[in-house]
Length: 126
Image 1 (cartoon, rainbow, N blue to C red):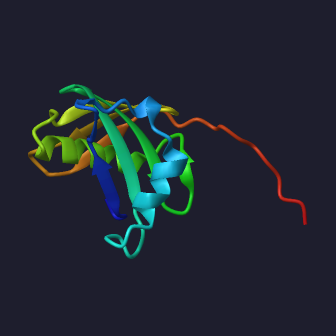
Image 2: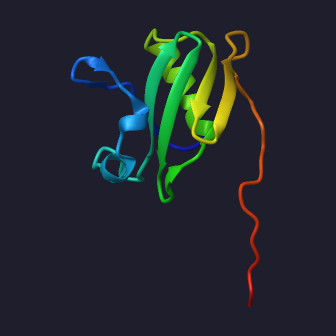
């Protein structure tokens, strides 16, 4: 992906992880600053809805919780495929909207399709 990602598929009391229930502001920094990641890391928390539909929330290093992370969504699909949890083409739901991610076997490239939308406009005053 070009930047570090830690993808988690954890469970909660033997049930599937419900990413909407996570307190990212509490657990995100613990991953970002863990000694295993000396350069810090982005962390994706994943809920598998089906083999072609994943849901994630992300804690980005240096930024905190964000609405979306394209490289994170790509990392999630690759990790899910390698773990036998998903197909190579998935919809990944993020708080900022869904992305379609495909990890092609023929060229080993990862393709992302989704909208690009402005969420803020601002000005810098000198």
